[in-house]
Length: 535
Image (tube, rainbow, N blue to C red; front, side, top):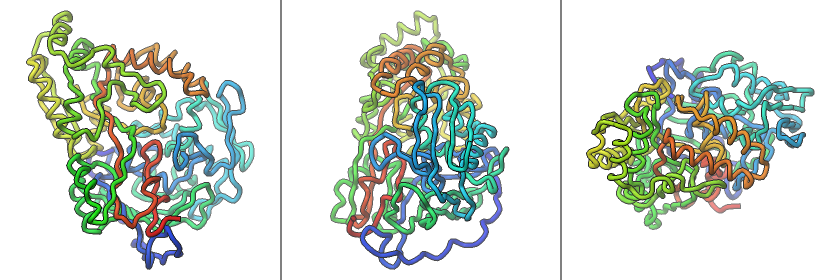
């Protein structure tokens, strides 16, 4: 994430010439044309966050899309579905009945792209490095339950967990558990810059202008040993300032595919663009938007203020007026479609009710209007974010119970740093799941090392419900724990869920594999993309 600009050394060498395709259907294209993916976002390096592609720091959807294709993990999510399958590992399993010891056997002959052997010791190093660096911006919290890692042989890895965690196999599919080369990545500090050295299905070269990546070129890694089949030889990822510019490039044929940050008007336009040789794939999504509160800030420290906001916010109106029904109202931090979801906020507060909100504030002796600034990132979550926060501002201010001003922050990294530093009273956030499980919509936001740096604590969720849910290998059996946690969050309102989005993939009509382009965590699977007739 980003703050002050850091001038980085120029990358050694130029991007290699595009190689000729191997031929056959589903390949990169005639004469080796790369498949070009457009991304309406930024990957930046800053003084405070100098390593946007180091797995110890990277914790956003765009950086993870790069890392998933280049750094290997023991397990991975399948083409579709949620049950992890082996990748660098040949097999993995819990070796005890309490889900506290997890063993993996690596595939034979694994190598990093630089030719170095990949062994169990490298897996051990990678996990221990993540925990040692313990980067505030990074995904280290996903590995909190690891007490010790052992490598009894070159191919055997044993994870000892401090407490049962049935979600651990899924966590091993994320870049938080990516395997890095100890001869390249420092043990105690971040690997600054834009280089990535891994053993995944692609090698990568990044072009940058100053501190910002402008292009990433993925080339098929001939030494990759894992469970994925790449359906192309080369993919190029280009970064644009906004989705309108990205869509323009798609319509002109300058890029082949885009998938994130589409405005509702763009979705509608692309749905009817078949005559322009474009297709739009619509998929269920687990992406959510919510408001986060600094519960130590005196303006919102009294939960009555937060509850009153929950009684006023009109989610159906947001979805209708801002998103033209390209999303759905969300009444819990756990989205619909996941085991354990309940409409906790609707059950607690019902339909929007200004009179009820006024009574809530009066009972708590809160002087109105309550004045605060709602802060948001202007470009990270798509072009409709500004319209959304303005709509929220109107809803709250029209009640006369609140006096809300807005502040937009252009740099996502600066926004994240200041939010973690407790500089915002109320701020707008989005969440793409790390893993497709209800646990990932509760645990990351509650506890000492939570993703938001929130001071909110709840002993029952932290000490009872989350640990209890993680003992259940059958995730249906964990549903009651999740329901209780959602009810507590609706009562205390440290977070205020807003809406849940669908996922879209827009592509030229000669691009195959778009139906498999996103996994169950909304991660981009570039290896599924081909050009021409599908296999």
